[in-house]
Image (tube, rainbow, N blue to C red; front, side, top):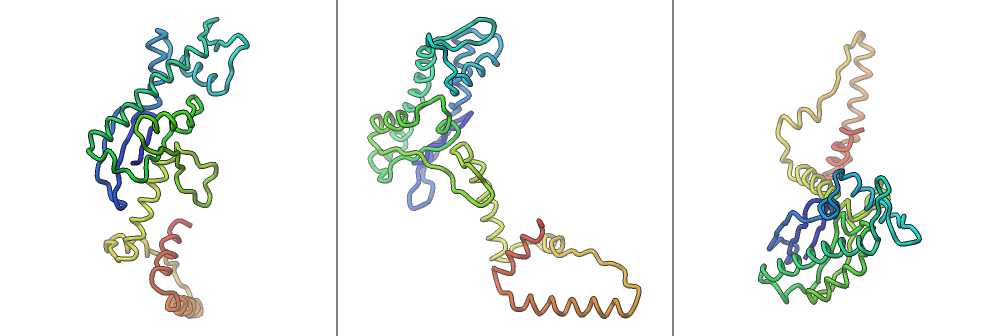
Length: 236
């Protein structure tokens, strides 16, 4: 089971043999830590809630155990932890009930993998979260990072959806290249070249010679390698 706890929602997707067999989404995520504080503390400005959570993330807590915000207002760090844990417990209950509702309880041999923005958020203790999920569901739970690729630094679980979409697009491009399923219009645009006017016969001969050399090079490049190189050249 893949569990993606994001900012605005939690997705639970069950896989068998690399194919999706069950999926469910609920509007429950990291944004609710903020909305909980706004409601419980009756805050008129949600920026105060953001300030409280940021200070908790950075452990900006006074020696007497309080987080100060606004104009002389404060909240106990322990009290804030209780609010956060209550919401986390709700997420865990949702995960457990969804697996039970799916009818696959007892069949998830590879356990649960968690990703998403909340998993990398410092306001929760990830290790304790995984431990609680393990006790609640009976499955081994672990955190996973999205795949890394050249040019992307410091990959976190919050990037899971964006990186997943990127790979999906790249796989679709690769499929089109391998199957030759680009439309005629797409091919025409990709192969379009700017033709400069030729003023002399010598210039024309030079251009023709260069094109022949280029054609010979292309003949030596075969199949997918050639297609991929041509595709990447569109973005250089």
